[in-house]
Length: 379
Image (cartoon, rainbow, N blue to C red; front, side, top):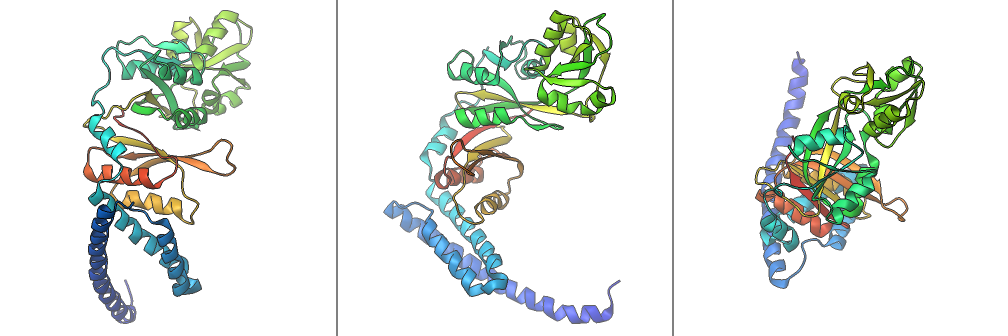
């Protein structure tokens, strides 16, 4: 319980803070009314919303006038106010015709009886994801992730199913790089529970070396280490299972799913050998064209950032101001540009809602290398 003396001392200060806040709010509202007038003037003059040079000049003045102790804090406050002002202007001007046309004109449902591409061979976790996402479809299998993207790009397949992250091993960096390189759309996603098994060909003795995809081996380091089993990277969990079945090599095993073991006739030595319970891999569906269901719930974007102090923090704050929850942020180096990055973002939202569309449209006009990657449902 607080001391009575404390309450007596702090109450006048709190009252003073309340008074200042009451004075700040009308000033903020007055500023926003000015923002609306600026938007109308820019509309008539055909001028863009963002004036980066003016904003930076204001921030520099604020830092200087606030002094060394509070300069950066004051700049952060003003940066937020300017971001809110820009958002209002973007809403009024309905900018970014390309994004708004995409939202309006894209189909709301995917193709009937589509051709699906997966990396690996039958029995892979990608195969399991494809069966969940496209019941009844028989996927086309390709050796490598780039082959899947090229199949979709060239029209050999309508959609590709690729893993993007695992709850234990993290992101599949190669796939993120391919998504950013090809700038394809994501039109669906699924979470597949991962139950890894140690398998061998019957009669080949104790497993001393296990083949599997690198991410799968990372998920099972505890079991493999405790049993003295060396891991060796292979292109795919199911491909490793097939290789082990074909080679029937003494002491050679595979880390794969029970489905893959059944497909290739392997004996399961141990089940559920992954490090953590509840291990899950998230798979994304890639497409040449956007599909934007009315009830979509997850949005993916990609962009780089201006070389301005605090640009990442200011950008992320705009999602909070719009009431949107970020669920993932991934940075990937831009090829041939030293220490420059693309940022891949996932957040909960629906592009058909006005405030979300306005934010995406605003970012598309302000951010370098911007790409809207999709709005889709996850299962």
